[in-house]
Image 1 (cartoon, each protein chain N blue to C red):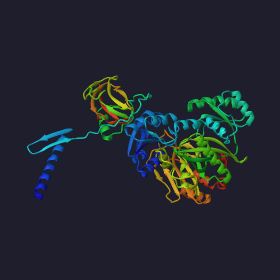
Image 2 (cartoon, chains in turn brown, yellow):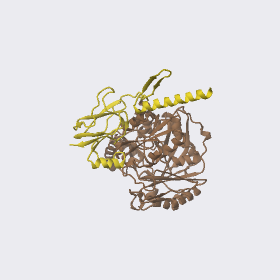
Image 3 (cartoon, rainbow over the protein chains, first blue to last red):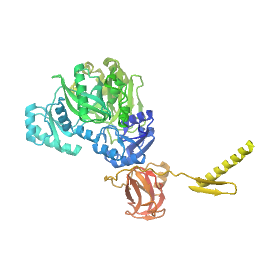
Image 4 (cartoon, rainbow over the protein chains, first blue to last red):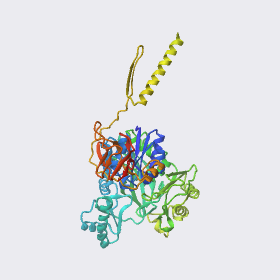
Length: 448
Length: 165
């Protein structure tokens, strides 16, 4: 087991990892940018090292400074959190070359599955259903037109090196496809350093369903059930719940089995999530991508399984085999997470930076709050707007919704605008309550 | 008889304690004392830095930002005083280990009172076996050396104070 870990991240996930390390008796080193010098993770870590100015490229993405901090603090391992360097195979590789364990998959598995087009090819080879589309990266526009004709419009243009809902554009006809392909390639080059794109059929009524996987370094691969993350705005998840109430047990079994097969074939290790789109009209699922890191919404799975996924990540990375088999996993009740952002839902979710004058989180046995904010905290403007993850767990979905409604009422954040009012509306929305929604939910139900 | 032995042991311990204090006060690592009926050798164990074997990686380093307006992580009052005196800080742009000389037995780059130009090398910050020479990037006289040889430094940490010309 590791004796000291460096957390290469910030905000709520840094705090989350530090807390588990503390419980396990593992020493912690937090790294921070100058914008985060008053942040909570630093107060909980045993040691903290400033690694750069506020800009992410010079701090949380500054590999030399992070590795140097790890070496001078003599840590055994680095936990990358999510975002930043979490899915950077180059970083994972450097850590290991410096004899520092990277708490995540190997660089090779990350490279393979992190390339969306390569992951699709692997799925195709394994017989895991993929969204109809180009079998690989599109070298020529002519090919794109052929594929689009075959699968039918509208189509989604996706960046091979993209992910997390970024680098996607929809085209409705040949003309717009050609136009958007050029733009998509340019954007992909700028954002992800790789202009490769591929296309998929656009599924008009879809649910986003993902499966949490744990793989140890001894060949054991298990799943921890699925999460339904359909409620999104501009492809960014806002609310996640588990289980998904639209799929049958049979589909659930096949989905999880396919997820496991894919991860095994990729020689994946540590925690990861396999994402699918479920076509509500055709009642079938398609693989879309793998996230080779811990996800923001992992608490939803933790509450149902009783497991600490960060702890499992640490144990796996330190070489321990999983102590449970698939049949030992029991998923109970229903969990819902709302991502509370510093955004004003009334002004089209415009970012609302500033100082939090009062933070008072709900306290109740069925409520969990993952947050790094506190009364008097000033939100830095350089990073994402996530303030807190509000998660509830109850025996049934109805009770979970009632818990969330109550928790949202109790949650006080003053000084900035937040999306709490938006979620209160969702908790009273008939379509959400009946479970009848797809990825267009927000546009369809809220005039923003 | 037992009481006498105890008394003798007690006074010996007191003596040893005094010798240890003497060593610490005078920064001695070894002391040997021989008297008629008493001989003792005290050796202070110095923590040998354990360098892990890391490959010297060719990694691009960010530019030295010695002249930024970013606040260093030190006592606010002391910092305010330094600023009031018009002293310019030389800050570390990287995380690593601070060395005053290019090698353990070599002369230090600069002392208190040394005059520096923009291109004057003031110290080394070693990051993973790469010895990064830091330049003053300002003109003036060194008035304070703020860190110790071998100390770990972080981004933005004030290394020296310079009284500008």
